[in-house]
Image (cartoon, rainbow, N blue to C red; front, side, top):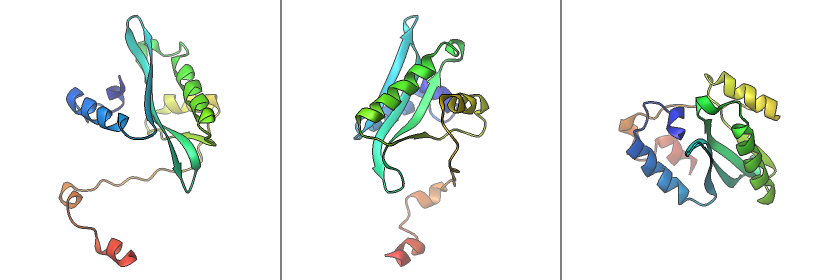
Length: 141
């Protein structure tokens, strides 16, 4: 279900391995909606706390199978996450949305969400992933 958000990035076994690990982390949750005998919409989110947002709830993944869109499943999942946030003492609900996901952003705007920041990204080359901390990190200590 959630693999449709990341086509070609993970096979099913890799996806399941990561999901099992994430579900062991504090505050990480997954919820879904079934119809016609299968999961047709799901959300992965976490309750966490940071200096910039305080206690907040972050949707990491949310998806509805294309054939089931427009039936209120996404709305029900968003409401569930928001209610979970309220019960958990969160003051903010946020998520990231890829640039190509115009339809999803339209849905988030309709739900009452606003674009309040930019998300920056930089790939880390494989050769650097296992090396020691950079001189910049050492200089900051």
